[in-house]
Figure (cartoon, rainbow, N blue to C red):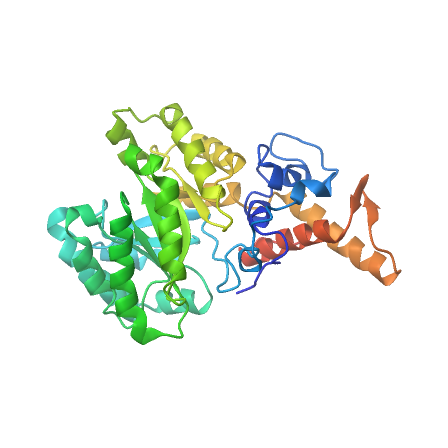
Length: 383
């Protein structure tokens, strides 16, 4: 899998993930919104001020790559749940062009079907050709276990980690406290120790209650610490906002407009992006899977906020969501032209140069290269 430029750190994640849809970004990634017109018709003149790309002096060299130098970036524009006990739906996964198929043990599986889900997921990981193919290509194969509060997670992990082929990513729902994270890390590192040398098992956590939201920074600091101490057995890749459980926890009624979780989404995103580590932020599920127009609106809104992907519950939602979280064609065209122009000017012995009334130098070239690299990573057509 292709690696992205390590130059820009966290800002480069905004750049490659939200490169066509964002219009409201932090100062570190505000340049992105000026790389061409957004969906709201902004100017395509390109970035104006390289100073906006300054990263915090706290950033270390290891943190300057979107996922650090230890492992490659896996896009998760759409994260689709497939019930782990449904053989017919699992068999259809190879026909889905989705970044992150999730074999589900939790909400999508009835309580009396949990063991069937474990066994089928175990068998799928070991025998399904699509699992081997996706892992060979560096694509995601994910499993969501039950929460530790349910009393079912240990059984899930025991079954999952005994498979000859492990998932790329483990999704851990309803995280509430540090002890859950330490307990999970202990089980995982103990089981994975004999598999040293493999890529780290990626972890994605779920924030699904008011308590977890308000404790979120402490929880993520703990998760990053235990991953760093795992000797590359584990890697924290991202966090999911579990809107439905959150609404149930605070007594709110879910709506398509999602105004009842506006604060929670923005607070969630702010905490995720406050780390000098590039963590993916996965947005809420659109509850009406038949309303694709409103799904598009909500997806583009999430990308403008700074989310890197979205949960989906039906195959019809995948294309809409992944388009919203892909570089817009005009942004990709801008990036390709910048790279080509820079190459020409370098041959002529020139450094910085004027492009669409903006000065382009090395930092902005790297932004453009990241857009082009990400477009190739997700298979977006090049001009």
